[in-house]
Image (cartoon, rainbow, N blue to C red; front, side, top):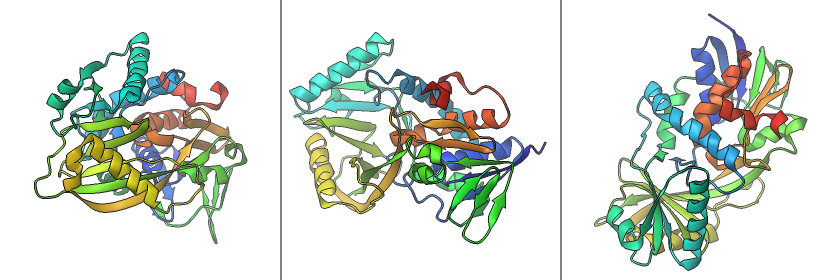
Length: 354
């Protein structure tokens, strides 16, 4: 049954997931983006890790992330091969101050009923032999997942119809392009950090945050990683996410730098130096790519998923969690389109909850 027509502005993981779910539900969909799959979703590690992202005061974000994590296996199975990994995450602390930070996280998770395994240095090295002997302690989070973001985007891209033009503005059922318009029943703004320029209500809700990643492939003699490794090195976060082919995505820096996507020497230096302190064998890998992306952040780190006015929906502000939150965001947008209640955990992302 055809429900109507929607235009999704933005072809990152959120926009493409929304378009795919809406199309499968009977909505005619078109995605408006001059360069699909080229933004922050393409420059991502692929961690699906709400527990290791948790922090006191952000319980609604944890609940939202956990609800989406539970949906991920079915979401991936419906799409096909997206490189979903189920080996879990280990979190490492390099020095005493880092270990104290992990203790705060573990105690907080225990206080709200989430269980994580606490590891000594030798225990964490038994799980991941590549880990440095300098790592003091850590946590094991076996329920975390990871996805190959680029495989995922290519699969989603193959299911969408595109208009390869930039959106200049949106109105009630209208997307203004360079020299034409797209008429539809509903516009869904899912343009990441650029969403703030498409509706005045978003200007104060969404801001750009720059992040850099490196992609590495194993050289001769390199020890492969089995799990995602997250670490604190003198309070600086670093992560290493393995791929099925042995490659590793290393990230991520974070800057308040507007829309600048230049890769800074200092960012590359710090990522490699911190990664090598945690996994010394990373020096045997080959650097094949450095890239920067612009995340869409919000004041409370929760995304914004709601009606802005009749005919205009928004799904943006996912910060570091766009890949993780893609299933529940798509389900929430579809519920709003169809006049149904959003998933309970997604209620915190609505404007009335702020």
